Image (tube, rainbow, N blue to C red):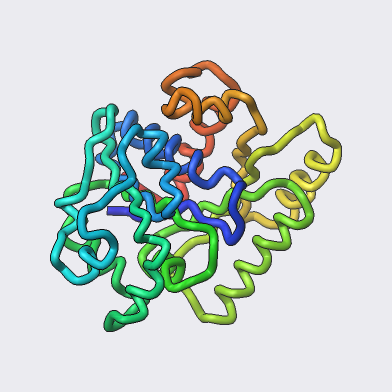
Length: 249
């Protein structure tokens, strides 16, 4: 099972939309896919019309009283399952801190279900915390949605510096431009310059679009309700490029 996390230090950059759309695309391409909504706000759970509630909460999972298998929910899409969010995730850092090997607990929880799925997507909360450190150690790659602005690029640079300082290896950082508006010269210039200077940045970019914003109304992936739209094609391109970087069969 490959593990992909959608992550950014800051929120509001298209992280959850990416998790939902790529999860849907992966299942459409025949991959047994699971999304884990780790954000206590529960946006991914909302998009899939699944109640953000886990009996026993985060403590129940970490204590071993509940297995991940027990909390997996089927979505409306074949081959795509979800572990919903729970409001107790807001205290997940505290629960992890009380555990042995606190940065390895996520891997411990995931091990029993690894053979059941081809791809796991972690929709991570925006922060640097014990939760994110668990994600860094568990994931094969981090997809980092980045708005083409100076401040967003600065956040991406902070993430890279953090990885170097902490000596974190074994996980690829895959930034891509999100909420991009090619009508703005600044967005175009930043994107072209960054692509030229940083080969790690994926070439697919997700446009700022009303079709993406409609996810909150339709509660569905973009490709399910606007399959011919520009963002639907953009997510398809992002999935293809991510698939190549993950080296999945």
